[in-house]
Structure formats: C-alpha cells, structure tokens
Amino acid sequence: MNAVSSRSHTVFTIHVFQRVRDTDEVIYGMLNMVDLAGSERLKKSESDGQRLKEALHINSSLSAVGKVVMSLDPESGYNYIPYRDSKLTRLLQNSTGSFVISACLLV
Image (cartoon, rainbow, N blue to C red; front, side, top):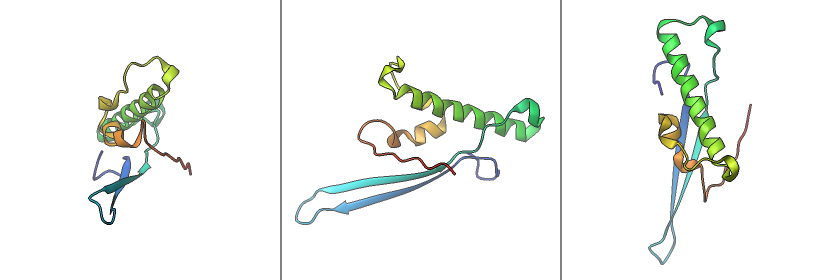
C-alpha cells in the first residue's frame, strides 16, 4: 500500500451503522471498493530501483489474494485461510468468508 505511487492498490471502505428503534440493537454493514493494480512481468518491463520494488510488492500481494480466494473453496485442501500473508488480504479479511455477500465488477 503506497500513498505516493500511481502503481498501487486502492481500497475505499464505507462503514454503515443503523440503530433499531426501541431496542439497543445495531446493524452494521461494510462496503469495500477495491482497485487492484495489475501484475507486471518484470523481465519485459525492465523495471529497476523503486519501480522494481513496487512491482514486487504488487505481484506478491496479488499472489496472496489468489491464495485466499483458492483457500475459500472447501475442496481446495487448505486447512486455513492465509489472511496474514499480505496487508491487502488482512485488510479485506472481513469481506471474504462466511456471512458475506460479495459482488465483483471487472472493468
């Protein structure tokens, strides 16, 4: 996650709370809008220095997202879901798994 570079993932999160009348019950919702940076072939791009470092981090976090998605399949053979493999997967941990409604829009 990089606040300066244009080559980074972007995560925009909206938290919504609703208090139910005449009770103390609170309903909570969260919407994550995620823009993932594309992976980069390091050999073809000939990146070096800071761009190489950024590309390595981006590729690593995309790989971690892939592992999490694969491990969510009960037939995958994974014993656990590797959320701690990257900052991105840890950030999106509440948006995957049980009791989650997900939608994916690719543009």
